[in-house]
Length: 322
Image (cartoon, rainbow, N blue to C red; front, side, top):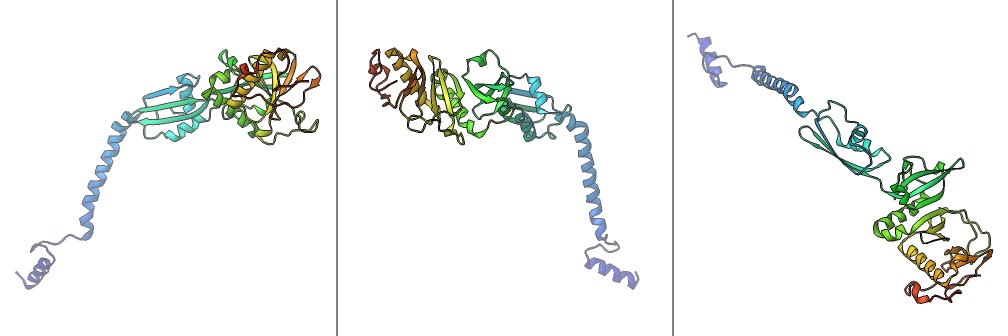
């Protein structure tokens, strides 16, 4: 062995290489693992393409819904394309498309691996049947407790709902929310339906009235501008009597109970048939007989109930009419 070879073998040994063997350079060390990784990746892509994709094609869509639409109609609303895959659909986007329908209040969508979409759709529930004026005709629409118009037209079941009148067709565009000033009224109706269905059933019609006199304590002819829900003037008709009750503000449980009690009391006294209108706006009960208007009177005590007032033929001390 020559001296040059001995020197080379010594340097190789110092670098960790065996005598007589050249050490591989840095590029040679990572080329082989890279090729292995690329080969494995290509294999996975091919496996996914020919095995995984067929397995994740959406084959099952389950629908749970209380919306009066068929499963096929809801599927169309969801916008899930034919041949879509489990990993390519967005549950949030499907929910957004479903909730764009006026009839849908809320939607929940789940992806179930490997090939199923599960949709739960909650429909809007009517607070009232609204009769809106349009070209001299009445347009019936359904409005929910949030004041959203979600259906035009009615079915037989809808005729059992309280009627709200006094709106115009411009207020009741399908899918739109009513002006804010009306929102509290429909929220009150929803609360009555959910919490006191018997009182809700006692309401026949609620008419959004034109401003009248400010009440017995205010100047005659004073206008009321409904800039807030509390200023909204209403004529309320009960199923037990066709005498309108003029009021402002909310239609909560206490108001309906009180109205029923007053109507029952006046009926027992035999004067209800002669009354043109009851006025609750001042906090007292005032009623009109014929062309005259009564002055303010002390309200009957709701805790006593209608039976406690007696059944006389004339006005009691608690209710005075003119």
